[in-house]
Length: 366
Image (cartoon, rainbow, N blue to C red):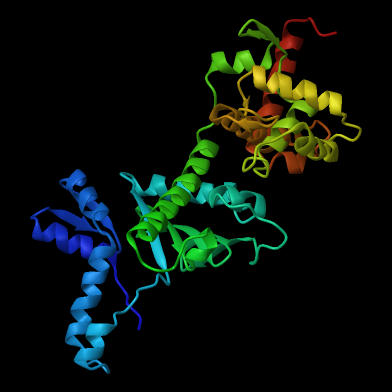
């Protein structure tokens, strides 16, 4: 016997019963006059309401069992699928849509095993079933991004052109070591899993989009400084070794169990041939003193701080998406017809031409 319940519709009926004014948004709420009361209603749905719903219908529907049999036996409910969602409604829908489309670009590696294990807080091994990939699905003009873990998944899309919807669907509680039988414990565990997965994905996306440090902090990073009485060597922007280091910190695969000299050095060696253990020790030391990583208690492992993650993303995105493409456009050997296709190249060549004329007018040309 299968039972289907829509918790959003249940919450809407409870809110209407209590006289709370709200504006619906398909499977959710677009606005509400008393958000705190509505949140309390949504949080009040437990396994007891599901069991009550089931009991009401089993009393109304014909049963193949006699009254005696129904008195001796009872049904046991199991969770076949549960979906937890997070809906963020934007005041300016156009800005929200632009944010999501840029986020899709930043999250095209969301389905990688190293990133899936961070979002779902589960270790991925060669024996973990499933295909790990990112899917960007377009239904009409609405793109959807998905990441899968075993039988479960998290997906994100822009709902009705005005709200960012993040949904975690658990299709098998065993994926997370949770019993399938519906009890107070399993219900709470599954809700916690869904909320945590949604929060991790949103947190990672927000850190990637809001990563620029303030000028004072940036100066402290790129210059030698004294931190807690100890010298902290500079992390020079555009230095090949520093940029390789930040790029490796953005890879996510070390975040689940922390990072060590042994786990981070092979990644660096792929970018900088001949990279040594001693260089890795030095780099870990300056990352720690600059506050980008911290040592995990009672271990030889480190973990990336929130500040460290934002900094790594900022340095990497700035170097890869701004500096490198811009320098290519400003190449003086770039053919004129190609340079004229890029506004930055046209403006730069116009500036050079105007500067050359000013120098000639001043009669100080070499």
